[in-house]
Amino acid sequence: MLGYATRLQHFTSTCHPRSNSSQPSSASRPLEGVIVVSIEQAIAAPYCTRQLADMGARVIKVERPGVGDFARDYDTRVDGLASHFVWTNRSKESLALDLKKPKELGMLKKLLGQADVLVQNLAPGATARMGLSYEALRAENPKLIVCDISGYGQDGPYRTKKAYDLLIQSESGMLSVTGTGSEPAKVGISIADIAAGMYAYTNILAAILQRQKTGQGCKIDISMLESMVEWMGFPMYYTHKKAPGPTPAGASHAAIYPYGPFETGDGQSVMLGIQNEREWTTFCVQLLDNADLVKDPRFCNNSQRTENRTELRDIIYDAFSKLTAAEAVAQLDSAGIANANVNDMQGVWDHPQLRERGRWTEVDTPIGRVPALIPPGVPSHGTEDSLRARMDPVPAVGEHNAAIFKSFGLEDSS
Image (cartoon, rainbow, N blue to C red; front, top):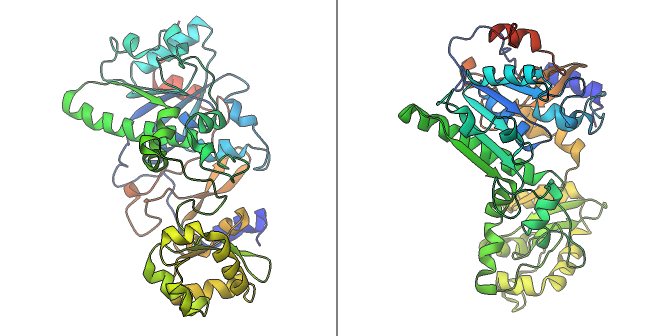
C-alpha cells in the first residue's frame, strides 16, 4: 500500500503529462467564457459548480470573509485541509464578501449584471431577501440563468424545513432499501447532495443551450428530495399499487441472487454478481463443481434462488472457503462471471485500472499539490487541451478579491 507522500510521488512519475489550464490553448474548452457566480456552501452547489469549472467556466465562489464556506472546516485530512472542500472546489476563484453590508452586496449585484449563471444553495428565501432572486436580477441581466438548490424546493409545505443529506436519504425512502432487515443504513457518501448537484449541472447546461436559441435566461429550482426520488425509481415501481418493497439485504442485492459479497478462505471477500441462467450454469459447473445444482428446484431460476438464498449462501461459502480472494477472482474471470474486489479506500487509490488509464493528475492547494481524479468521460492524454478538464488550484478564502474587483471594474463601487 502506498502512503500519502509516496502516492503523490508515484502519481507524478506515472500520470500522463497534462497541460496547465492557465497556459495558452489552441482552442477553448466547452464553457470557456461562461461566468458563473455561486453563493455556495457544503456539497450540492459546490459539486455542481466544480463540474462547470472542469469544463472551462469561470466560477467565482462567494464566501464569508475570514471563515469562508463552512465545509472548509469539516475535517483536516488533506494535510490540514478538509477532504470535502478539496474534492468540490478546485478551479474556482474565491471572492470574500460580507453580504450584510450594503456596499459589498451592491458589488455582488454589479458583478451579477455581467454574469451568465448564478448558483446558490442558501435557505429558501435568503437570496430573495437580499434582492438576488431571478425576478429581481433579470431586469438588469435578462440573459442570467439562476439555479436555486435546496432540500425540498422553493415552495410547498416543506419549503422551510432544514435538510441535510441523511435527512433527505430518509425522506426519499433510501433508508428503507439499505442496511439489513433489522437495521437501516445510510449510504456512506453524500448521495443526496451529489444527486442535486448533478441535476443542477445538467439543467444549467440545458439552459445555456436554450439561451442560444432564445437569448433569455431562466430560473432553475433543484430539490434534493426530488433528485433522490428520481434515483429511487426502481424500488418505487417495484412497489407499484402497494406491493411489498424490497427487503434490505446489506451489501447483497434484494431481488437477485447470488449477487453480493462472499467470504473466501483467507478472510477476505469477493463481490459476485450472477444475473442470468447461462452464468448460473457456468458458476455451478466451474466454480461449485456441482452441475446438479442447475436443475435443483430450489435454485432453478432467480426467484427460487432469492427465496432460498440462505441454503445457497452456505453452498457458495463452502466452495469459496477453499480459495483465497485472488484465486476466486481469477477463476470467476476465467469463467466469464461478473465479480469485483471488495476494495477499501486504499485499494481505490492504488487501483491498477485507474493507473493504467492515466486517470490521476494533481492540483494545487494552499498547502501544496494533491492527487486528483480526472473527471469521468474527459480524455487523460493524447488530445487537444480544449477537450481536457480544467484542473486549477483549490482557492484560499478571498484569494481572488483584488483580481475580480479589477477585472469587473468594482474597485470604486459604493
